[in-house]
Image (cartoon, rainbow, N blue to C red):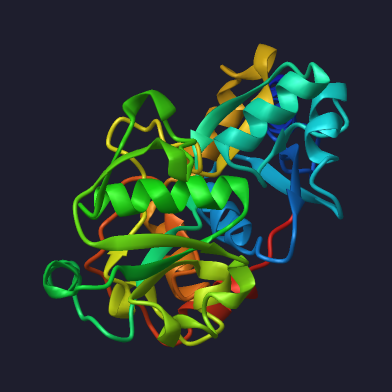
Length: 306
């Protein structure tokens, strides 16, 4: 009887051990993470460490592997051919243009950030002051804008939002100066090279400047800008950056978890704190927050494992 009982107990223990091994996907081994390769360009990509931190805290079992490219024409090609799983380097307008030109079957699956144009002035402290000055001036007030096609269009749309001009609606998000139908104030739009707009700001009543030039010059959008370019309420702004996937994978549940992790408060705070408002989150977040002094360095030093 004792021998029989021992055998039964031993069999039960063995069964439990096998079950435990199966649960852990092999004895002594934790379940491996799903590796997702994300194509990026440029140096400003540490927000993906914040995304990884969110995924780990959620127990999502997803590992983000960044694949860096040194030219903007490469990540969509790599995504289309299956060399990477997602990419995150471009705005919607670039994706549409690149896909049309090269026949890529790639689509946006989520908004990430916007590198906004902002209207700055050393002469006026608000849009209302600028409008009042234009109304009382005999000479047209010069407004500096970037002279390259995409950013010129963005600048014109920003001036429209500021109430300085009216633009032909048919021009959509790509208006030219010829699409301005009415000047609501006594101003003149002056296109110049984008990289000169900070150093020549004194020469203009105001200038529209991209954050990549403004912030290194010491201009902070929330402190110094008269108006900041934002994501449109209906999400149609084509200059918002996105995460892209192959169209056939747009409903992939793993990729949806990555988008959701990106569009969290932690990532929003990192974007704002780490890049000094060069970038703004293009998703809902609470702008009334506080973070410790070590917040950015803690994210930058975050480590994870596959």
